[in-house]
Image (tube, rainbow, N blue to C red; front, side, top):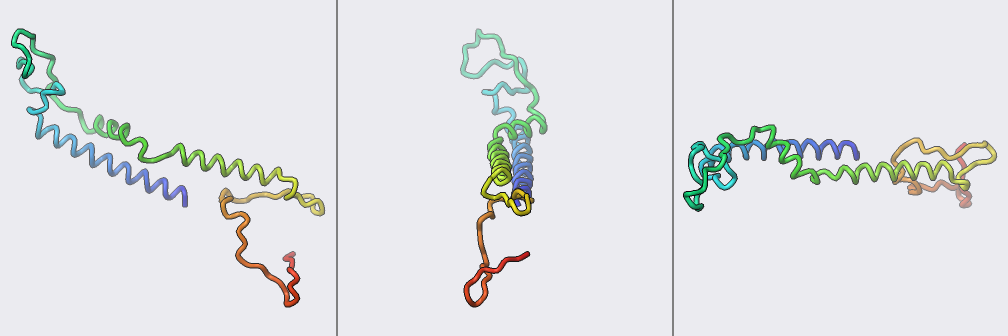
Length: 144
């Protein structure tokens, strides 16, 4: 369940980032001449607006970023969208719990000389009892 959730979140993140990158490219192309404040201009000899005329013209950029650059820009901006460090931490804690089950003296059976062995990484369900089987006198039965 946890792996499917993470994959779903990553798919949603890629879709959101692709949409944002596409919209950024469209918006930059439509508003190119109004983006002088970030150094975009088709006319490379034009002076900076609102600055004295004796300053030399700046180095204008005549094209906007491509889609791949915008995609990675939004990957960087939305990197905390998926808390992968939390997912890794949860998995590390699960493996630590499995180790604690394996080395627990109280969970060792001397009669059969076996330790407790967790056969699943889903240790959050341990200790939850759903059914207790007993006979009519109240004696608990043992499954062998």
